[in-house]
Image 1: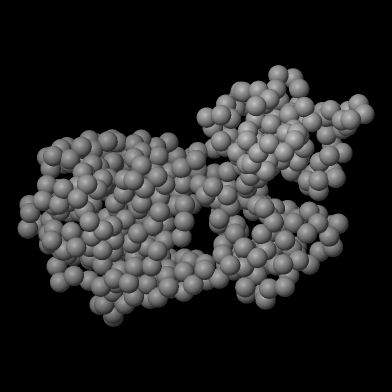
Image 2 (image 1 turned 180 degrees about the vertical axis):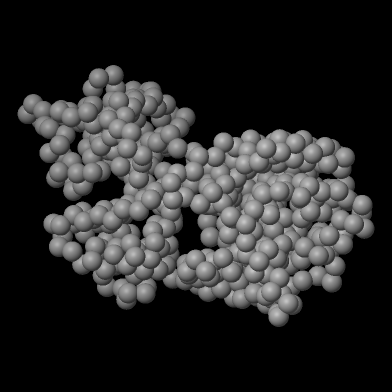
Length: 486
């Protein structure tokens, strides 16, 4: 099954490419070199990795890249993803590797084991798993290339329309976007499949016809086989004109995201948003800010009904109501004037697991300690909770007396802190600090042995507090809350 659609692990909004819809007269290696330079800059010394299915499109792209490699001075390799969805998928993987070797390109294989929950789309699950697997195999600074064509862009826009997508969905696929730890490039978006077939036949290339591409149970295949032939019969230039519409939608999306970023900055309260600031926005602007912010937290977007519920009744509720809205993969909760985002977890005793979690922290060599065990690649920094110890001449931590390494754990219940007159209960500190009840299990507790040294950036044991006016050897704890699982 060919790699299609937006990258699930993409870390930032795609950039608008004004030549996405401009088709070349024919596909040639020279045109491809110009296209790559337009997307990536000078090619000398670049590292490219092609998502190679072995089908027509990726075979033509790999052959053209192989012809350019020595002349342009870039490194090239390929990766084949075996979804395991067909009895012949192993043979297809072997064939893809052999064809790449014939072009003197190394090709690795990634075998996936897909798990599709009830109600989930196999296409969507496979796409997300494919991009995660490919991103995980990228080297820092390496660009992942896919062979999506102008015809794929037409299919993507039409599918977005029938699914009721907004501007982001109708902008379809971008030619260039971030994909940690490198970039994702789609250089063939202006090229048609007919042009690639002409190139492949002229160079006597062989390719594999994936049998799953004829399975009309998949939406994209049904659209390609049943709908598009009639559409092209009436409008032969549909792929080019719809691609231009997608490019215009990308401009609109970028403008909306710029406005959303500004609105979210005005409402920001750490990793949360202030409800009072959101209420001052108009309905459309408020929904735009919420969509952008939820995506920045690394969460899947809620459906239209739930987004309206968030933007309306949830924000309008009394401050003491503590409403919440949940959807698959995410949740928003309100505590007073703060709106907090969470990644929802499978019911597996997550809170008790966190309570038993203990992390060793060498703060001298690791300024920030991640507080979750999720994959860092492809996730915005905002979505990853972490605890930092930052050197700060105005900080309150005496680094000279602070032990190293420290141990970081989480609440089990009953914790007490050293105070001037005996001990104080941790739960009272968290209550007074305005930490919502559902957030308290995620507050990092810093220990030296069995002694509680600090509670996130909320409290510090006086034994380790800097005294006097000396500015050297000072630091400050910083807790980045992120979008955490609850």
